[in-house]
Amino acid sequence: MSASTPQNQLVDRFGRKISYVRLSVTDRCDLRCVYCMPKKMKFVPRTQLLTLEEMETVGRAFIKLGVDKIRITGGEPLVRQNILQLFRNLGECDDLLDLTLTTNATQLKKYARPLKEAGVTRINVSLDTLKEKRFRDMTRIGDLKKTLAGIDAAIACDFEQIKLNTVILRNYNHDEILDLVNFCIDRGIDISFIEEMPFGQNDHHDRAVSYYSSDQILEDLQQHFELVPGTMTTAGPTRYYRLIGHDNARVGFISPHSHNFCESCNRVRVTAEGRLLLCLGQEHSLDLRHVMRANPGQADVLEQALIDSMQIKPRGHDFNLNSQEILLRHMNLTGG
Image (tube, helix red, strand yellow):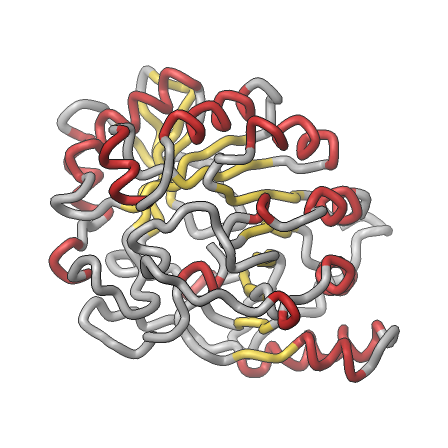
C-alpha cells in the first residue's frame, strides 16, 4: 500500500473487506429485457433519485474509506442526463484504480470516446443473442445493429477490457453459446455467462424451467474448445477460463446458483434512489439519501454511516430458483 492509498475501513462481521461498489445512476433503460423488468415498468419518480452531485459525494466517500473500484450501472446509465460529468469527476480521483461501466451499448457509438477520456477503464456490455428477431423479442424493443455498432465503437477506443455479459435461458438462447464465444474471439473481447437471478415478479418465463447452469454451458463449450481455469481475476465474482489457442478472449461464469460466490464477497450496491444494498439478494440496506440530506455537507457523517453499515451485511444471498422472496425489486431497480 502506498503512502497515499487510504486504509480500507469497510470490513464486515465476517472479515470481508469491501473494495468494490456498484453505483446505479438510473432505473430507466431504453430496452426492456425480459429477465430485467416487466413490459410495463413503473419507474421511480425522478425527484426520488439521487442527484449526480450526491452520487459523486457517495463515490468519493467510499474511495476515502478504501474502495478502489466503482462500477456505474443502471438501468442504462448512458440515458441519464449529463452522466459524463459524473464519470469525469470520479475519474479524477487518484485512489480509484478502476472506473467501469455496465451498459447495453445502444449509446456507445456516441459515448465510447468521451468515456475513455473521462477515465473509464473497462466496459461490460449486456448482449444475449446475435439474432435480430430474437434480440428484439428478448429486449422487446431493441435494434441489434445499434448495439453491435456500440460494441465496435468501444473496441476502437482500446479500453483495458471489454466484456459481454450474457444471460442464458434454456429454450430462448442456449443454442447460441458457441456463436457468442466465437463472436468474442473474432473481436478479441471477453464474455461472461450469467445464471439468471430471481429478481421481481416475472410473467414472461418460469425461471426454474429456463435455468441453464454454468456447468452445462461449460460442458457445451468443451465439445468445441479446450478450456483451462484462468489466473485472471477482477473485483467481481466472475470465474475465468482460458481458451487454448485463442489467447485474445476469455470465457467467464457468474454462477449465483450453482457456485455460490458469497464467501469472498467484496461488494455493495447503491441504487439510484440512494439505498445502500449490503447484499444483492437480501434486503439489508441503509438510506444514504436520507443521511446526506439530513446532514448536508457533513462528509464525516456519511462516512461513519458507511462504516456502521458493515455490521448489517449478511453472510450471503441464499438464492433459490423456486423462491418468491424477492418480488418487488426488479434488476433495473437493483442495479445491473
